[in-house]
Length: 390
Image 1 (cartoon, rainbow, N blue to C red):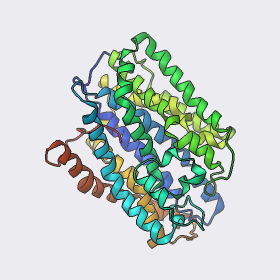
Image 2: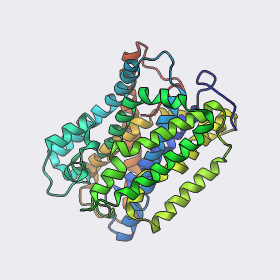
Image 3: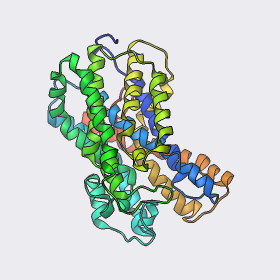
Image 4: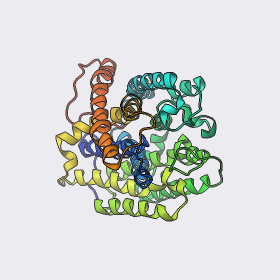
């Protein structure tokens, strides 16, 4: 069990470092898979096999968001103050990435996203929905493939979570400590039911090597209401940590369970790779990481480098897809068919470094100034000082 703790006694810097790891698990599979530039079919399918790392990382982000917001909730905060901080941070980076993505799509067509059909035309409605972060509420078959910056779908979920958070928090705080574990188990069960319910949907699939009907992805993966249980699960984990009743489950168990869940995907319908199927192992990883810090256990996630990267993880998440699509247009070429070595080198030596550089620029010149203007402080960042997820 953990000792009872409050936000004032501990800042969970390791969760900031964990965000960096999660962002990396999104970046690397996308960098290898999105360009679709492996001439070798087996190599392209191997790149597609990495996508569950990215989808599991999204589940981790949602749970992490609920955990950190609950842990760091300010007693003196008003709803308006909370919403304002969250929206400024979300929209500052998102709007810049949206401008760059829409320019590319408007100029070269919706196929620039690699999720839309090759003959797709520019859809103004889809782009406006993407700007205001309502795209995830619209059935995917009509809309999702045409959004200029596809990863922004998760921001639509986060905006929904933030809107509900001031109303959810009092209820979560009123749950008796002895009922927190059963409530968490119920939330996990709801998460596991989502991909099962998604099997009711059918239709056309999305991109090559991802044989999942779009409506299944929409329901299980991008619909904010279906991802809310993961956010609530994170809130419950924070309460258990604060009450000192989180069980001392070794972190390796969470990692092992995540790997086992990925291996089980070979025997499950494909939609399971695109929903809250990973909620339980991600919960164990998030809460286990926080618990280790509360017990002062050593961890590389505490290192200043990891905290530095974690502070920039939101910028990396929202800009990396745009960077990759620009590289595909101006460097690789849309239909580049490269050998295994050449395609991998393009991803590792161009896509990933360029994405990291763009994230640094976005964080330095957009996110930090926007947050500084909100707070009235200079645009400086102290190590680990900002550990809220996007």
